[in-house]
Length: 115
Length: 112
Image 1 (cartoon, helix red, strand yellow):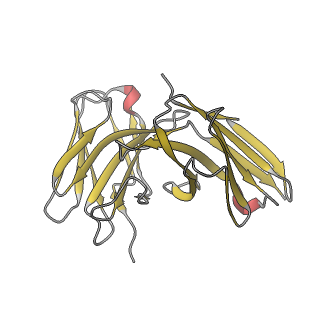
Image 2: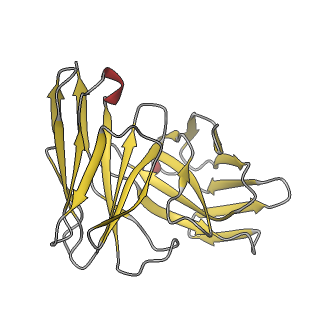
């Protein structure tokens, strides 16, 4: 079974630019979660999509947005990049109808560096 | 406000020793406590989890101890091995949320 995949693996952008990160969940999973992992800060929840709908949003500004496609893959968009957006962006997926104890399976992440 | 406080930030243990990572939480609504293990270049993976109706859960060399009154829980790694070297995150979630709140992580190094 293929795991969660993310692209690109690394990205370098300059302040003010826009970036799009992509995630493909495990086959059969319908929920996709996005997290930001900044150095020393653990994982900060960004967004949760399920069945194409945004279900929950973390405490991040509106320039962080995303969407989920009919095939359950997802994009995370970040506009007007700031230096502090430099981080590892992780995507996770879980099964349909997953309760909160359902395991989230994480991808390897996209490392974003903003200069 | 950090809802889940994790310590230590880093830990060095000799092979065969016991690694102990502690977490404390403030939100009494939290009732599910997973631990994640993250190797360099990889995403976190669920290691073990506990609900507060038990005080301890063991899976192989990994044990979670839970103290509800103190609002603390800890991960013990017995007979630590170099292959256990990774970053460990504790987390907590409540009945109304599917989203866990994570601690800041502990970098564990096990020397051969």
